[in-house]
Image (cartoon, rainbow, N blue to C red; front, side, top):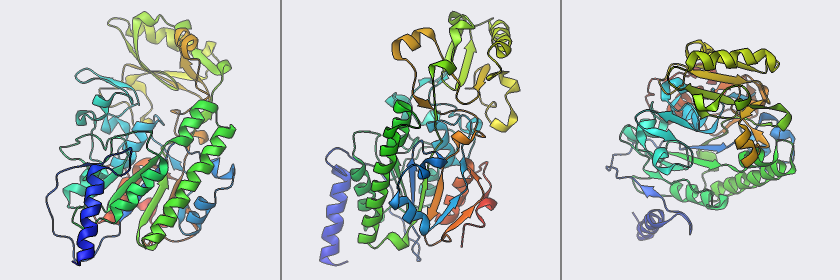
Length: 422
């Protein structure tokens, strides 16, 4: 190694250890030095634009995404798992498993041994006991492939005793250019800790959809802003001569639909809330009746289906549709209320305190409003090709294939990628 290369490696290592930007520090897991393969592996960068509906590309000019697609492939749409929420779907993508096989059944859930899980609960989010299945970074690390995650649900936790080589605790204040800079820096590491699998996460489109609704100018502005970040990433990859030497996925976890007070169901108008624990509100109502109240609560909810125009369906746990691949996990409570788009539930007291979101997700994955995007570009993919829809759980095996990994047991189907790959 030249003197210059040696000094550059030291500078990069110091940068990554002490901070990838002024506001962020990367955690570096202890890894043993491994002998690199004789042939270099093509790196894979997985990018999530949270809450990006399939029709958002038609909303406004997106020159960077358009350029990306001119060099790669896209699915007609990506179908999420049920419920079509952030943590269940990001983790399904990472593992190739439906919610009933990971235990990540919602953004908010309850486990009798572990307590409550919520996105804002740092202790729960970083507790590996919540996460079933084997995420891609664990598969990779266990097979000698180094990984680095610029945010991804589950990547902050010690899952199966493994973390990514580099990972960053979620902090929404870290600017999007800084996130891109971190990925670019990681790709230039010259020692055995250089990652061949990386993630990058942007939440703005989703947050603006929740706060202002699907048709809002705020969502349009968010789409344009994230497109500029993709453009910056492309420019930086070209600068370091990586644009033609890396496989990149641009995808999302779910779509979005607008809500209204007129289509809000108040649960306390139907049942006595003192008789239940509500494990999840919103578009997928998860109800745990108190002892001895199950039949009473179920019958009250079931009787309300007709009264409310059959805009929701009430299921006992055992009767939840098989196609949801949801019911066979102990964290799923005894009753599920599944709503049509755009209906959702709250309580009178919650409504008086907080109102309702302007937009939401979580509905049936078959609903077009919940469909999202999958784009791919790189040496292993064709160009300017569109192929049929794929399922969220299909992506894990594709990632393993591109990285030369033996996949863990999963629910996906690798055959769906045949047309997209060279």
